[in-house]
Amino acid sequence: MGPYRIEARLGAGGMGQVFLGRSRSGRAVAVKVVHPELAADADFRRRFAREIALARTVSGFFTAGVVDADPEGRPPWLATAYVPGLSLEEAVAEHGPWSERDVLVLGAGLAEALESIHAVGVVHRDLKPSNVLLAADGPRVIDFGVSVAVEGARLTRTGMAVGTPGFISPEQLTGAVVGPASDVFCLGAVLAFTATGTGPFGGGSWQGLWYRTVHEEPDLAALPARLRGLVERCLDKRPEARPSATALLDELAESVTDGGTLAALYTDSRWLPAPVAHAVRTCLLY
Image (cartoon, rainbow, N blue to C red; front, top):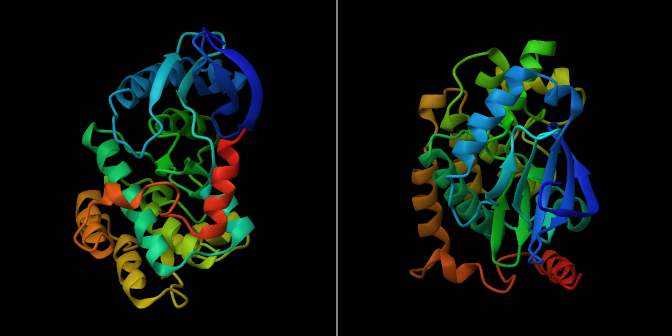
């Protein structure tokens, strides 16, 4: 695909399939190839090109940045930095919920990622556990800058917004203005999931999840007190009442660094729960 040799299939998502690719110099990348039905949509291709141009300006450490793309390719594709490791979804499913401190440390990295994404005018729109990869030196947020292109195409075809039930903001579901505060809502849901193993609006059908997201309060009874207060503010139904990513980063950094720096926390997998750290180190061997 383009200058990259495809070595393996990594998975699939709302935009298309994801492959492990390798450049001529041996650099590993994740190559995302657009679904044929999206590729055939001229409006999607225009949105995709515009959003990729924005996404390439994101330079935050806790993001898997876009390194190459061909929006006019047949099919269109983009390549991002490859992050060996588990997704947050896999880690919680395989090793269970995390302690309060571990969740807060994770939250600091994710808040910094959102801060860097929002700084260039991008809104992720689909922050969820499977879009958070766990590396030895911190979390990485993936798939930012493409969801808006997919959303436009899906709205045209089906009338449904992009997002994952249980990890989507009320304003995305009601057709209101979507901005950085929508990502903060999703971050709150991700942190609740990490601490409990389930989303804050329960399970069941997507219709039930969407209804509860818009009309009911989240179930945060199982969260420790400090984390519960933070998540409650993120999950406020009113976008203007939610903290910004920068405010969250300042609050979380103060609570977990003990006078040090965030960078010092994310070293040699020590920021992760022990079984997850072992799994991540194992991934690095392959």
